[in-house]
Image 1 (tube, helix red, strand yellow):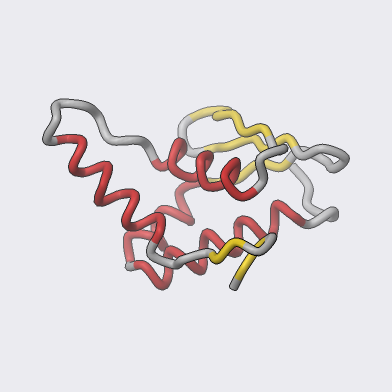
Image 2: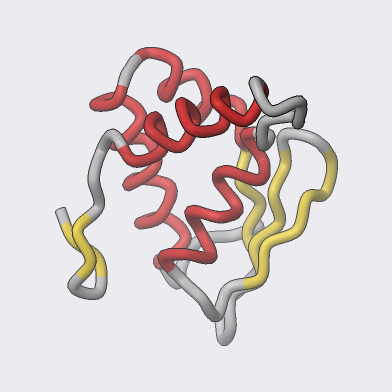
Length: 104
């Protein structure tokens, strides 16, 4: 599936997690699920503004549309099951954020 001409690879987020695990070896903390998903949102929709309301809850401000809250935990659980489930969950989140009828 593609968005705005960019191919969405199901394993991208999982590969990001592997890269984050490599950072642990350098003595730094890996990124949180919140920051990984926030990066995915702003990467797909650069005009959106994402903030962390509290750990596990992202608030997405969308120009011309109502703000929306994203629950991180269900997406993270899908990602822990593998790249196909992770890619599906992330794609669904991105589609929901694009929708005008989404509410926060």
